[in-house]
Amino acid sequence: MNIRLQRIQKYNDHSEGLLYIDNQLICFTLEDEKRVVKVKSETRIPAGIYEITLRTVGGLHNKYANNFASHKGMLWLRNVPGFEFIYIHIGNTDDDTAGCILVGLSLSIGNNMISSSRPAYHLVYKAIIQAIEKNERVFIQVVDELH
Image (cartoon, rainbow, N blue to C red; front, top):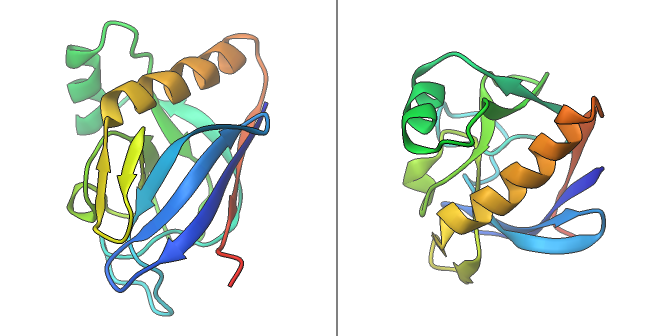
């Protein structure tokens, strides 16, 4: 499985992107802004390739387990330099993320707003879980804006 987050635009308070699985556009993404010096809970992760595994402990895991019958663990990006517990998850603005990647089916361009996050999350989650259950290693390539 090939997952790619292509960042398309950065703003002063957030970053927007597109998420592809096996070269098929699945949804939009929203992240914190890019910073030279990390500010806790206000900085997006660096571009790179990260393995995704499941994290089955912690408050967010418990919340998702209580709300989604299909939940088997948080989608956890591993070994992100300078960051811990980076997830792909549900949310609508950069206030809903602390460096994590939010997903949605629609994006209000330039307005720090992503919508239909739950359905987008379920699409992404289902695809990744199927690969993990087949004992495939799952990686995401995060690519910065082209300009």
